[in-house]
Length: 98
Length: 190
Image 1 (cartoon, rainbow over the protein chains, first blue to last red):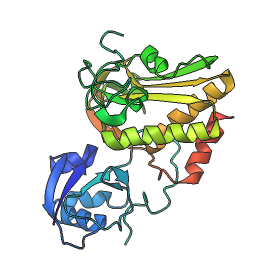
Image 2 (image 1 turned 90 degrees about the horizontal axis):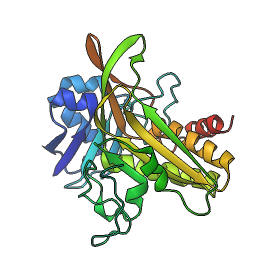
Image 3 (image 1 turned 135 degrees about the vertical axis):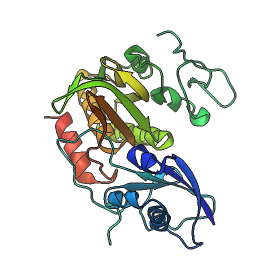
């Protein structure tokens, strides 16, 4: 199946595209789509542990199963608040852990 | 305030910004009145417009927070900033923040406008208005809103300074992270 991948800020610069259409396995999760991207753009792997993810314009956990035509967005940490980092917990924004 | 006009015209819209308003881009047309309260724009922000989106006859107080581009950061001389956002999720984040605030301070209404694109020193990047029958809640909710925007809104800032540029990456909180939300409440009500 095909999904649309949205990338922002540094992630967008690494791939030189804010939007990419990619073929992913039919049972792919959001993490699977990220894996497809990191094999194509190895520099993205530096962000594996810090990104958040959204599917169809809603924050989503990385184990969210994708459907054909879904839009999956990968979000680097947002700007601001750098002096007082808030611990990232929970599935939705915990990044991908091995 | 030139160019910022509220309109009730257009199919499926009531009192929202339309696509035709100069300087206001990518406003989802079917958000009805929400369009006026929560928006992303590439044009200059006007605090009065943001305040007008929440003022009603019940309000005895409106507080407005305006975030400006500062000429220095982390020991660097800043020349200009560039903001980028994931608009649909940013708007939803603003709506979520307003719902949270209204849950905590039931009589408060919030409006949040964020600018994207290139901004020079002194230009406004964000305007937040909180309206309430009484001032204490308006001040608190406004502070709460900016803290939460920093925590959960998918908006990124690239700092162009003398000698280079850098994406300023700070904390990202899971929107459902209760610790982060409590921290924002604590800052709003010291």
